[in-house]
Length: 119
Ligand SMILES: Nc1nc2c(c(=O)[nH]1)N=C([C@H](O)[C@@H](O)CO)CN2
Figure (cartoon, rainbow, N blue to C red):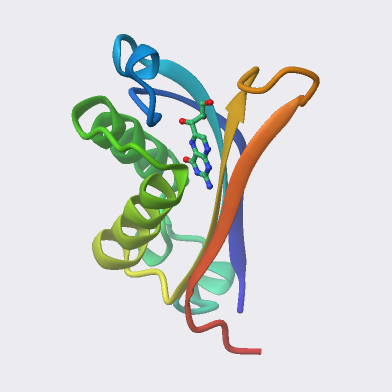
């Protein structure tokens, strides 16, 4: 399967289980791998045959501005579902990273995989 990847996408969202985290949006980083349904775009050279990564990023940022989660697990699941249901990806891997959350820990995060990844 051919895979589009996006590294360290910055997004603003309200996320966290504690009251102080619900007061204002924080910056998170997203890493995505998105399986593309076919090899057609490699031959057609046509954006209409693939998943437009710019549109994916805009959709995620828009959604996270409107929808808020307590857990990074739930946020990752939301993104994975959008990527699969709205963009037709058969498989995706989503990592969510929170910055400067724990003392003496650079980053914390979660990584999930959803869908089937053919060989
Ligand atoms: N497995 C998780 N553990 C924790 C989460 C989370 O989303 N998943 N969140 C928090 C707090 O929101 C934290 O970011 C602030 O201290 C704690 N543990």
